[in-house]
Length: 248
Image (cartoon, rainbow, N blue to C red; front, side):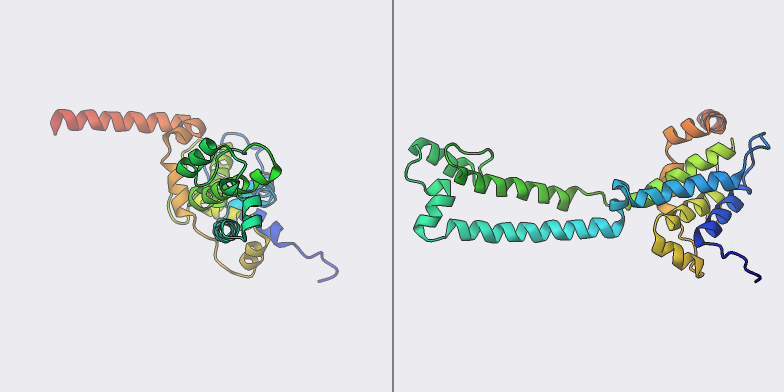
């Protein structure tokens, strides 16, 4: 092709985002360049992969939970070995078995603290079990409190929402194939080089229906980014509610 420089997959992704943005009813400003907005949005989406948000995809969350569970199992094994070690070693590591501890303190620990909640006095040996207890608590938080949803999907959908608000005053539709859903899916593609390569090879753009619906139905996000349409929608809903109350 006469030395023509090959275009990168990212270039075609930006053009696809710009094409979707041209489908929107624009603001009265002819200087807006959809491609430039698409380029900026893609840069943000790709940056999420290298930030903390990039570690909150579904696969990353699953791996974190599995690692936390493996560590908890290792703690169980180590605590069992420490508590059942030969007498001298067991006495050294386990403060509950020490003969030089105050009897009242030892009894309180046995009754109330299976895993001591604060470092015990005297030697560094007393830090072993409390440290294991703290590590166990941290791993249990990872296992049970990580978000159930793919946070990267949510933030890509929110980026699409904000991007559309920069181009159009009109509240976007949230239907299959709408610019909102298409741009959200394209940003999600751009957040992962592997997905970008597959998309460039012909794999369909993912439909982020669930997170797009969550954002689209959020009254605060509607009012913040599309205040005119939101006010008109609320007025129509209020009139319809009053009509139903009056005429049934």
